[in-house]
Length: 245
Image (tube, rainbow, N blue to C red; front, side):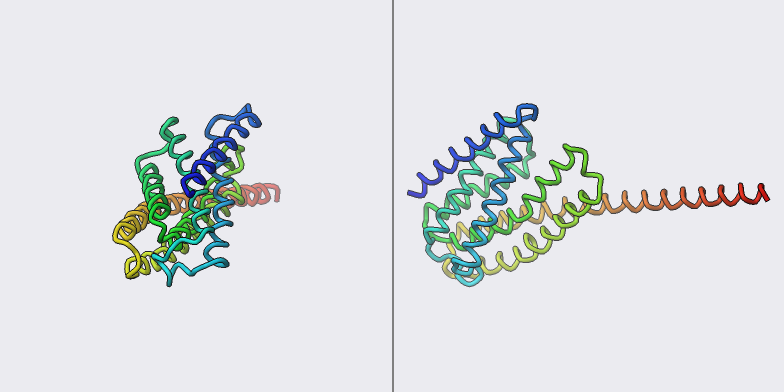
């Protein structure tokens, strides 16, 4: 039954992609794929948020327990998307080895949780934390495409993305990782998967920290240059007024 849901999910994401292809005929394939990614990000965050915070059980205390029907459904929806996106990335060669490794690890982890019928609780929690920043990442790309990235809105999106990634995916993710490792119910293979996903999160965190540092440095330099130009303009205005006197 879960595999049927995964196939239906894959077909659904493919249909959505082709709908975007037919709708946005002037845009390239990446535009349409990122629209699917954005749609998945919003949907899966809302779905896993309900699974984790409302339907339960709590992943920090019930790691390794049997999957509920809603957990299995959320995992199937997510797995279908990852199959679609992995195939698209391989076909168009748009992602590097780290992102492909992340997709492969995500597919393996979700597939294991569905096939074994356990650990859906913490897997949904990991998906929620991982996908929470995804809509911001896609918004950043779309802002670049329409020429609005170098603005206050672009800065706000970048800042919120960095803060959310650091606090949720790394900060809360560390607690989740510890709970999974120490849980007597979680199987060894799921613990190994957790090690891989946690390691990849830190790889992304280092890249994001470098990006944040470079952008902050560039912004500071630009501010200094603008400040110097304003001082020079004031001096010129003062010089002209002295000559007129």
